[in-house]
Length: 260
Image (tube, rainbow, N blue to C red; front, side, top):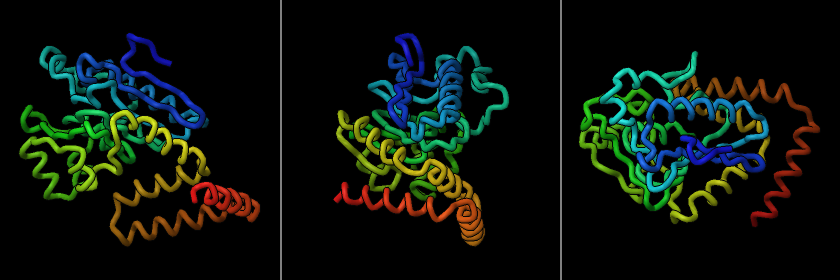
């Protein structure tokens, strides 16, 4: 999928897909067309049972420069547009059952920073940089930055980033826990594809249940999250047989041998 004029490109491989924001001339700024296309693309891939992981990246040199301010200055109504009916406007893409790996290849600024935070976890190129410039531009976040950023780096660091608008480089982002890995730029997509293959090799229903439990538990108190995990664990076990566990045990043992 994907052609030279499309704002979102999709490269499907066995078990996973790579989604690329494709407005390089605008540093992948989020105009209404791109937001609508991204939402529709992620919805389509999430509904495809053959896609067990998604890698989200941007066309070089940027991951995403945030909202298209040029469009916004001429079309203020575009801020709320570009989504399908029934869309969850709190997120740049729908709530996903498929794990999403953010492959941050360059700057991720403001709305682009929020797009990165919406991913399940992040891998950064050494060229990646992050900044929250909402206060500089004079707009407020609407895709969860004030919730997701302090979850990732802590409240005080989040307040510093948002109040100053300063950039965070890839190395510091790793130190602060914002990203899981920093790799050479040319190795970013191969590395992320490898992680996607690792995810795709697991029981897809188990991965989905684990990711949902993490997400739902993050909205609860610690005691409530423990109860949620116990309840879902019991429900899961009730749906599985001894044969299921034996087959998975053999698969895990074999995979362990190949990773030694």
